[in-house]
Image (cartoon, rainbow, N blue to C red; front, side, top):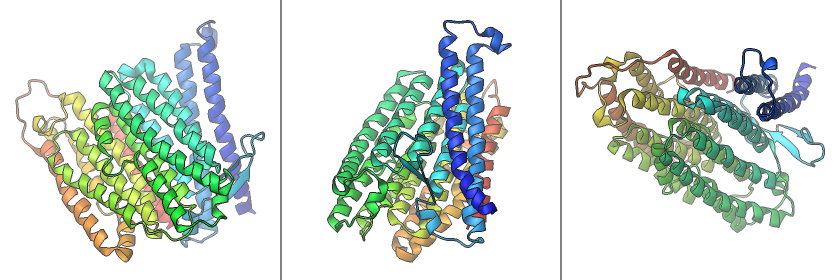
Length: 505
């Protein structure tokens, strides 16, 4: 039958896609290395060796993205449309073993792999944010673009294994491996020392969190006697053991998200780091901590009162919302938007409600598209007006109308206008919170969607519609085709994912 064929077809797509990325990187490395010693110009025709390698890597990444998108559609068609006839089943979101297969990639390892809905979304976000980050690189990074494409391809390989593994040690090793492409990305795209110093803040705090995650995983292995995720499902834990493990992973992954009051490093990093790294960090890297927390916390059985942990997430939302009013640096303002949305997202996965979880996955997609868009627009402003300060920039809509319209669209998307993906995600989140914690729900609505939104919009409206503070002899150049394409890509994908969720739910 067609349905059974699709179910068998899914692991094959994963396997072939993985090997496509692997051999693309391997072939490119060989060509790049031997081109230093031999002349391969007769093979490349009109291309230099570096241009040929970049073309191979970019084509491999794009082909891999298309294959994974096809796999995602087959996955939705089989598990949500055929089997459920458009009737929502919460197990399809929470259950991590929707299809289970063994020794798909490495027959000499006794590893098992599985995938779930959030894992599919997580891999897609890695592709999208990586492509957007690459497109945002300026011509000054032309000679470093090839290294960045290497990093993107390597990152996707790590993400594939990180998402599908069911071994705790392998899971932690891959989680730590994400730090390697992150640091290399900053190193190769930073034009000043402050960018590299900003990456050290990121590494120090995330390594502190990784130590706590390692402690939690070590404790789990000691009590289960196995490194398999499934072993934790079939063992009875006391309430004290569950609370101890949950506390370690809450702080361990929380440092990277980051949670209140450990979020200073994120604002510092965004302000000092180049725009490409801000897009990469905010759009994807912080979500690897969200996914890691989801994978481990979803395995803990028994009843656990998460009110204590929810306080930190709620405080993070409120603190970031209130601090939006006093910001004059546009990039720091966007950084606090990231802290606000990630704190709300962390609260969703702490709460564990079905409606909240659906909204949380949608908010994860929203932030992965909206945050890169905001950082990219701030970079567009800085390159044209040589400043990011609200006090020095005014009347963008009059001097660069296309950029002004793009900023208006960004503010509308962030405000959660009905019909946008953020509106739908927040609708599910607050609907779930209203049933179980109405006071917390109203507090978050007032803090984030009223007080914080006004503070955020106030800054941008002054920048967009204010009068010019000084006469300009030469008007700045408006958005070019490449910049318009990146903006349309982020906005268009948000509506695509909204349509997908309408089909599923």
